[in-house]
Image (cartoon, rainbow, N blue to C red; front, side):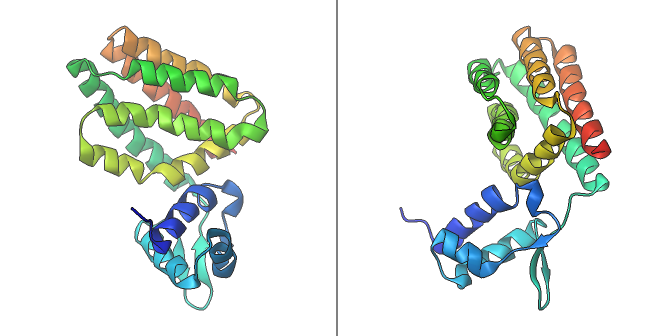
Length: 209
């Protein structure tokens, strides 16, 4: 099944441009994106309308699509929403005996193998995948779709935290391991505490960067 030019542009913008902290505070060059994706400007504009509906860009008359920086309020609300969704998923998967431990451990191992800031984006993408595995295992398709809409924001915010603390990579690995250990033990209280600790630490670094 072929992918439309609009969908190609949408995926490229969301996964490559909007997830990049360096793109914050700038306007998107439609022709440049069209050349990179290999489509005309019409699909680019259609994709931007979709992204504007998700509040990932702001369409400014006579200027184009603006990528607004994530504010402290944005970051706080993102972490709050993530916490609500991830805690729910953790409780539900533990109750159902559906925790994706093998997949989460595999993702954590892949993160451990990525060293250096040159791999920061790949590390954060795996970070997002790690949490998404738990969400998907909840069996709630609507919950999973809601969480998926946060992907670009999560990667961008995660990179802010990565560059905001020199030892953040090591800390993330330890925090993820704590989540996995608590899930493996079937301990709901410890799991929720580990999730809260991970997200709370992330937000603190993001707000002080």
